Length: 396
Image (cartoon, rainbow, N blue to C red; front, side):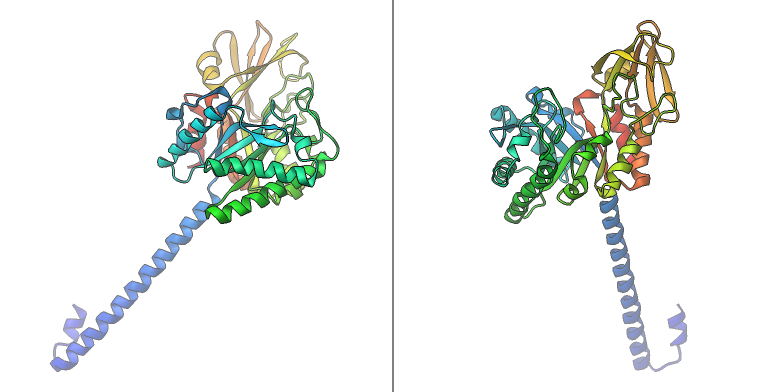
């Protein structure tokens, strides 16, 4: 309107030139604005991608064929397939027919979540006895590394997770461990990373290397965690089963309890691993989707007392639906440790577990500390996905 009024008494040729020049200027400004908006959107997208916490779920192939229909894959970033054995110095599929079927079914989940990464997890509590021998020498490490990467090559998977329980210290009865494990633990990751780098060049796709490590800090004395972290994408801290001898405790508290003298917590582990040189953005907090039941001789407060029996309680769906404020159990919350627990005055049982509130608190801790994310053991322990839903809600 302003331009029309301004050119009312000018010659037609000059008016046409002025209007044409003005339109070109306005279009140029709009084009630059659009470029700026696009650049800003791209920066925001990149920032979102780089800071989005990972959600790593262990899925139990050791049970046999997996029902992938019930896996809510849109709430996961990674699936760690548990487990691959270590036999005669090599990664070994104990039942390749079942494993190959499970790999095929898991990869189909990428149709729903194209960004999903699927890794094989080697070892675990039961299959860690041969790690020390497998990585004892440079030649044996090269053979072991190649065998692990050969599996993900064959089945077109995304990476390798090492769950060695434990280098340099006792795990399950009969497991081999030696002082040389300290350096060999690091050298094992270096060897696997070299094999993965070659595979990355061949496939044109990123290949991941991660590890599951205990959340008790004495582990850090028998490994070189800071050096090992240089070869790793994520360090999945098993911040559960944090036992203290024969004392009934929170097995996965976020902070130390003031009900008893606590030695372990998520916060203790994060601080200790960070002090050893593991970058905060590689640390993953482990969540138990199951509980630990302690029986004490005299109930009193339960926590902090000597236990005479300890059991694995699988898992949170059953705990929530069948035990919380039922069957003689009463629910309590340790506000300092940010951990729930149940007491049964009749049986003397103390149940430690994670619920929606404690999972939310841990997710908030991850965000506040700018950690990599969370992982959990394991998917089938909470079939109604109470806890996975809370993780998803907390990170959104």
